[in-house]
Amino acid sequence: MAVEYLLATEEQREFAELTGSICEKELAPRIEELEKANDGRGQYPMDQHKKLAEAGICGLNIPEAWGGMGMGYVSRGLIYEEMSKTDIGFAFSQRGATEKGDFVLDSHLPDAEKKQWIDGILAGDVVGAFAHTEPNAGSDANNIFTTAVKDGDEWVINGSKCFITNAPIADFYKVVAVTDKEKGPKGGISAFFVERDRLGVSPGLPEMKMGLKLSPTSTVSFEDVRVPEDHLIGKLGWAMKGEGGNAAMWAGSRPYLIAFAVGAAQRAVDICKKYSKERVTFKKRIVDHQAVGFQIADMQMRVDMVRNMVYTNLEAADRGIDIGRYSPGCKAVGAEVCQQVAWDAIQVLGGYGYMKEYGLEKIARDCRIFSIFDGSSEIMREIVRRQISR
Ligand SMILES: Cc1cc2nc3c(=O)[nH]c(=O)nc-3n(C[C@H](O)[C@H](O)[C@H](O)COP(=O)(O)OP(=O)(O)OC[C@H]3O[C@@H](n4cnc5c(N)ncnc54)[C@H](O)[C@@H]3O)c2cc1C
Image (cartoon, rainbow, N blue to C red):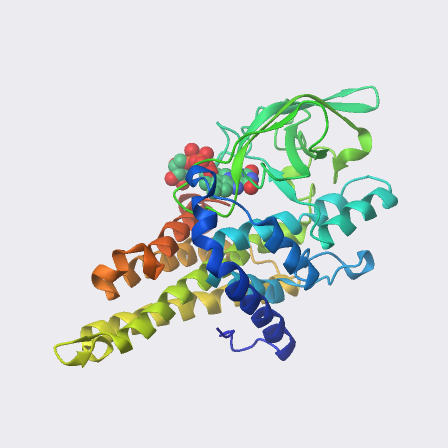
């Protein structure tokens, strides 16, 4: 499998293709077994995570000064596009687990402690998670009930989070909590670095999901969890403005996620291309029936269009250009196009497309998530509606 983004540099190509080949060789043969593990809840392969760390594919955004590579969005997007060709769930959790170094670095922990956490992430020994969503606060992200109350020189955290990627396997969480109810999102919501082994932290069992089986998702609750003052991430009260984390990440994260969708959709198109040249009906390869050939051509054109949109956004984010005007559209349209491609691919293979063994039903199940998490398509449209109605 090759990198298809025209403007990728030689170095970007090599790194991304190396990632793809490791995943294809080592992870692909195990996916069925990993999806079935834990009574169908699935399992995240920590051994594979560790192997990628050994190849340097871990914590890619960690700055060089802290021992990382400080990679930009385009380079990382290409790597995760390739990883997602093998398994989106694995790619999503691996990225989520290891790109949380900025939570550590934006905290007020002493440098020696930060270094221990960062070294652990880079070695593939430490996993992070971002805990914001609550039962009544998904799209309505400001409506959280979790609180952090100051008691002497400690914060006491109480509340419950749900749908948290990597919660069952995380060693630390970035927990978003209300610190000043009056101020609400305008200076009253903060983020905290919370280690899993603190008294009162209880992650739940992995949820039974329709897809992303290699990505463990669960609840995590915090009952009178005490953390020292230096566990605040960023500036007190400003977590909702991207100041409780890396502001650049805030800007680029949505198009970045769609690079994963592009990888999976491209995989679906590739399966169709191969199959349609082998399958013969009415004495013709099915790709030579114009209806089928056009179907695949349409799929490829749509994936190419989304890929170009994604990397234009990511290139701009890397250059520090504000992409707020374009990123919601990239997320919504990119997610919907890639989902449709994954769904359409099943048609190209006919009855075989409906069978698990050809891998397309899995891609369709996995791709369904992209228009839901990290800001649903409806919320993306709402952001654009507000922009155009000003
Ligand atoms: C697999 C998975 C992994 C996740 N990982 C994480 C994670 O790591 N950390 C984390 O904090 N969260 C995570 N989430 C949560 C995710 O971000 C939320 O599920 C998402 O934001 C939607 O929120 P909700 O589920 O509460 O749906 P709701 O907000 O209840 O929305 C329900 C429906 O109403 C629509 N809707 C809501 N409000 C509006 C509006 N104003 N206008 C138009 N339509 C609207 C929505 O688009 C949706 O279709 C994850 C979710 C999943 C499924």
